[in-house]
Image (cartoon, rainbow, N blue to C red; front, top):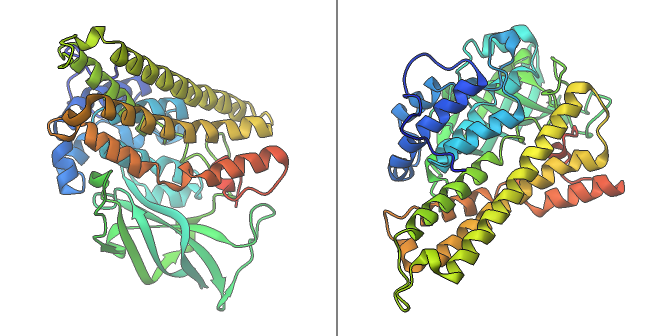
Amino acid sequence: MPLSSTADSPVISGPVPATPDDILARARAVAPVLAERANEIEEARRLPEDIVELLRDSGVFRMAFPESWGGPALTPVQQTEVIEALATGDASAAWCVMVGQDSGLFAGFMAPSAAREVFPSLDLITAGAIPPKGRAERVPGGYRVTGDWQFGSGITHCDRVVAGVLVYRDGEPEPNPLPVGGRAHWRMIVARPEQFELSDTWFTTGLAGSGSLDYKAENLFIPEEHTFSFAAPAVPGPAATPDSILRPMPGVPLGVARAALDYVRTMAERRVDRPTRQPWSQNYRVQMAIAQCEMDLVVARHAVYGTLRRQWELLCSGAEITPDERVAVALARVNAFRAARKIVSTLFDLVTTTAIYRPSPLDRWLRDLNTMCQHATVQDQILQSAGAVLLGGKPQNPIALGLPE
């Protein structure tokens, strides 16, 4: 069923929603607003301030905060549903929410007192990149950090910035102090956006409105308590796994594919094939294309939600996760991105030249999906890592499979 809001959807106003159902309802109500502003968002290459506040007031950035914080504690399935609903309106906005709601997840990896100092509000927005592109020299009380990071999605409107670093001591790489993980000591730092220098590099074919700028720091002091390791969560629980921030990602491509299908199905109700004068609704080629796309989306969507639900049940019960169960979520995630791109590409070709002109959003949706499919978690490296886990080999990207690095 389409995820777009209807006439009887709740109004986009009132207190910030505090329950999973209310946050999802608000997201569905916000989606048409995002759709109306999608061209503006793309041209601005960032989210306008009023859109940011609209999203903040919708409660979507507090989704991952636990009940102990007074948060709504949405499960990965519920988070993905919210992001999917937003993506039917605009991919860049949904992508920024997917990244920005990591505040609640990151808080669980930090000491509780430090986490509450860093995140004094449930609605603070986080941006940044986790690959260890920075160098953190250990000094008394913390680290001196220098680095240059890419793909800071949402950094144009965020409240906190995270960045991955490798720790050095006296100029030498510090070994990982933990019994698990890789040989290097990889940590994440958390700081305010004004502590970094932003570079306006985000001139892209897709996801243009995400404002995913480069950012850098030089000799920036970060207190020890404002850092964390994915291999050592401070608060144990089902959300305390390295891949927790990746679980809601498929909501973006699934929502875009749903929007594209709804758009073309509506178009087909009134379109006529010019050479044959046959209505599209009665055209065999159109019927087959729509059915194939719906089939691909149903399969991809059920794979995502089914594996997320199963993994969450296992994590909550404390049961051991088998290699097959471990890789299932990652494989479903990769498939969702690739299936969504195939669906929108098929629809783009079906509509032919009409797809390249505004107000048709098909061209933007295809460019958005092409760009998001370049993300590291959608590459063949993830398939290799999944195969390695299944066969007892070495994964190139263990974090995507929930394994510490």
